[in-house]
Every structure is written in structure tokens, then in C-alpha cells.
Length: 93
Image (cartoon, rainbow, N blue to C red; front, side, top):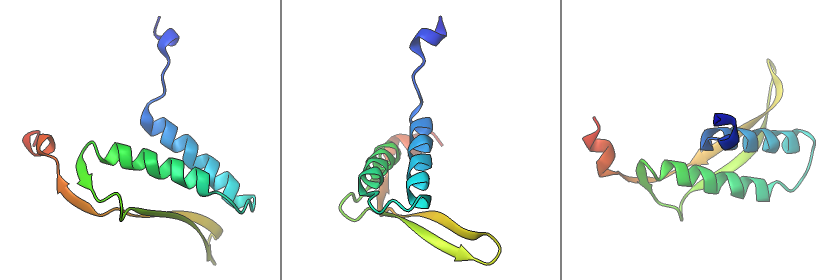
């Protein structure tokens, strides 16, 4: 009966989107802005459950990095300014 309601968790959706971004990045696709914006929106939504963030200052980017050990790899870099921890999280401690 559970397979009728097989809904993906938000973490799985985020992982799937990250995989797509990395595939686009490695294939040399130049425009991944739409994918980054979708991921940014999803990450902000999840983080906002726990902390209040400054959405105007939220930054996210995917960068290619070259190292001697691993060759070329991609990094997801995020700057997430946190204003405060939400009260429900403080009570759960």
C-alpha cells in the first residue's frame, strides 16, 4: 500500500538536482543559472525551517576546481547569512 504514495523526501530531490547540476557543469554546458536558482530556492526553504536567514544576501555558486590529486572537480559554494535560530529549535534541545 505504501508504494501508492511514494513521495520523494526534500533531501532526495535536492540530491537529484545537485547531480543534474554537476552533470551540466562537467559536460561544459554554459548556462546552469536555472538549475542553481532551483537549488538555491530549495536550500533556502529547507534551512528556513530551522533558522531565519537573510534571503537577500544568500549566495550560491558552482565552481570548477583543479587539483593535482583529483584533477578537475566541482564545488557547490554557499554563503548563507543566519539572522537567528528559530524558537522551536531552541525548545527541542
